[in-house]
Length: 291
Image (tube, rainbow, N blue to C red; front, side, top):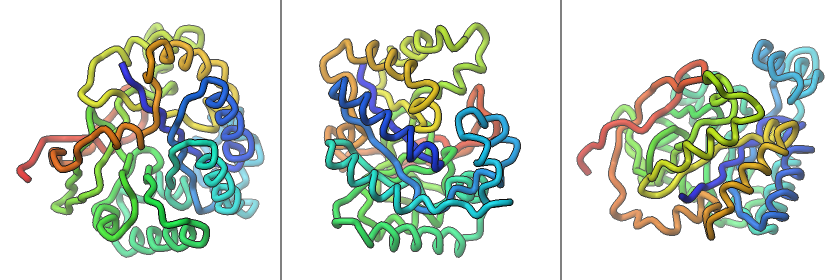
């Protein structure tokens, strides 16, 4: 049983409080994780129902971000923490521009919008980037053919935009990518908590049971700085205790990639599907296609 930790950051509070909390916890347990940072603005107020439901995690001011108040620019703090996470031995990557915009618009946007967003992200990162390849994840597991096309000229070493069972080379609407996709394999805590019989007191046991299913490259668990880095930090610690029971059981996505022969990765279609406990559709690993 091997589990890679995928940490996504989507808001001001996640950056300022959640990320430092998680980095301290991971340092205590001496584990590496993959942190994905956004380079746009916190527009949480433009998803009022979602933000109201998550107000205990995001904070009440988030309801006004992008509506009654300007959306705070996440890039400066994201880039500072990205460098800090890397200096502390973690795997790092980007989480698009505005997480709210990417979550709600990316999959259905016109190609030029995706291309502009991608170009702005690369330009922003290039101002401090050192040229090393990093990962790219997307909010709410969304993707677009134009994003796959843009990756062909990038320095991204892998993506993590969908759900699936093992790493592969993605193809969406005829557009192929040579950048390996490392999908999330395990349910999120939020998804598990919507299942019968699962409660905050036992959700770690259910997740541990899910992770015992053997997969070719191991599992990927997605956590958020806003939840697992704040109110659910004790739960995250319980999971680390359970998963750390085996030598080398916890790792970053970059570690998983280093053990893969990318020349032999299969090509798979990217489809759209639903996940138990989650609203809406997410990108999913689908049928294998000829190389």
